[in-house]
Length: 224
Image 1 (tube, one colour):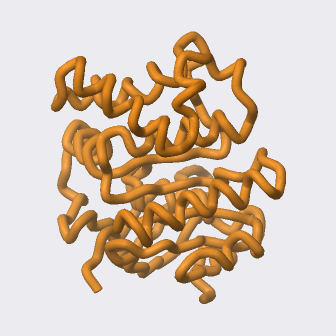
Image 2: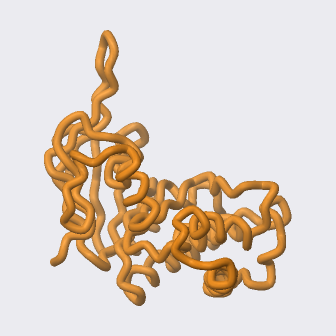
């Protein structure tokens, strides 16, 4: 199995008079095209691990590799460029910019990356919104969309730069059961039909069953 993202002996501590260990000595290898769910009790370090895998937080010790590439010696700018090009993020709170339309929100990452011209950016954003069945809503602002629709816009935005890796932190936490299942089915499609690597943090054990593999985190350590 070809590794898409890998944690090697990763520990994350918050400094202070009494240091707090968020995750300890994590070894985790997620393969290309694999759909993995990270589960565990509240406060077990699930989101902390995801932020380490996504290069949003640096490990105190150990290293994260993306597509086999070591990231420990990269500068903040290099890490930001790697995230923008290779990793798409979906969060529990969609973080769509409220003053922009759904179309605009999906276009923003492409404009930041700067690989496409304006016409190609517009066409790709429209195609992505069509792929999550929101093409007819592309000119609406987030406050004109339902919670499930906003989260699907967030998924489309995560796919904007065609990243091979999608990381999602409790993406269904604010959704009803039916809509949550639809979002998880979308993630499964991205992994199984498009070959993307998908890692989702979830507290919902039933939704986690839809993943190819489940990883249990307890007190910052891998238990399964």
